[in-house]
Image (cartoon, rainbow, N blue to C red; front, side, top):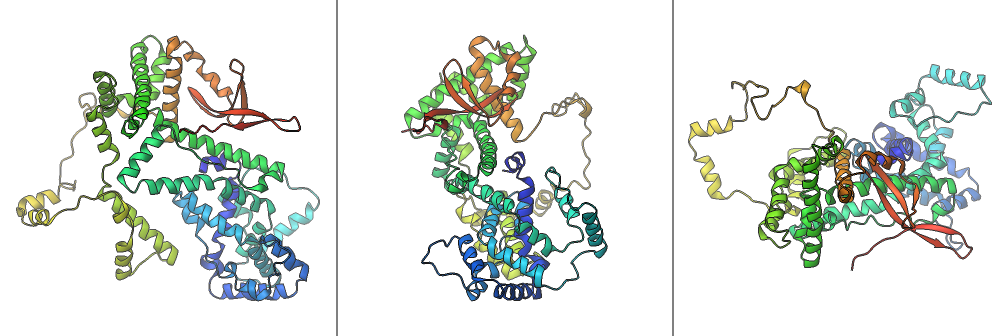
Length: 547
């Protein structure tokens, strides 16, 4: 989500939206300032003509002729005037982008009333102590007088530090008012919320599917078999109204789709994820999945035989990387020894243990503690709970109940632990304490865990992009294995398959939209050419649905 926002040029807008969403928290809107905002808004609305309320009604989505025009007392009792909202900055720090979408959605729904209240504060409110540095304001005014008619140059996206430096000397209310007066910022917020809604819904559905072992198995099979579908990102009619806005939305959707598809491919083109299709209840899916696993096995073995003859082939095998892991090697050996039997029970039992194990105590405790931290940050700024409140929320936390079945200690286990030898118990409790223990000396080259000195080690990239590169390497190898990897020197040409652009395969006559290139191969979504009644040709995606 973050990469998609940055690559599509929405990074600055998301930063401004998070600041605007946070305006109703902390010292910005607390106590007397909240009451002052209400008084200013009421006094400001009393001066407005009837046309202003009619325009406000249309902005709020009440466009019916029979619908009554909102009155001042109704607006003062509206949700926008008593909102506390969701603290968007906290979601940024914890990378909870869907929580940010929720806060943006509330902000957009209440945008007209909040913009009016900010304007009222600027026109009728008295200056506060935090209105800013007068000297800075005077300098800004002098700079404006020196260059009154020069248009502002188009700048690159500002970082958070640059944004706050730009608004230095101005009050938070003034910054908030300027943000809400930017129509493009509101449009970008709608784009982020609407386009990511399909992924947000899928994320919530996937989380729900992982609460029970059987649903978790079905979800694993669906993801690893490549059946995951993002959904339709273009359901809103506003996308057809403005071409420039539509291009921004399409750019963001393409970047997001590219990252989502590549994140799914890493399950399909890597072990042990690709082997999880053998857990399916459908015999045909298991046979089809084993055929794919057979292709993976033969390709990896072929690469291993040819790696000494070509440094590029060796580089492909090095980027695949997972073939060095013991579990993956065990799976490959089992496939070969059983004649690629899709119903071999030992393999299926191993995969069941891998994918349906109970949530560890560590996972449950971490989730519960994060739940408590989240609640404390919502309720108070000091992030502290009383003892009884802490106990209540810990008991009510859903993670211990909704996770997979837990293996809890019995009374006999507790009795054994409490009645153990005191000396052994003290020794056991002190095993994790390194104080007073002699640390081992590292002998590089003699110890298998440290074959080289740190300055001699070649470190590999880690993280999602490394997994993308691994999947791309295996996908290329499987495609080019028939020609003995003759095109390995020319794999870099995939970089010309620019993400988001459409291409025609001249041999087959098929159209594709590129979803990005990762060192060895590129992904493409197949498109279908359709002709409208006016004779205009269009390209649209083809969605395959399995029966």
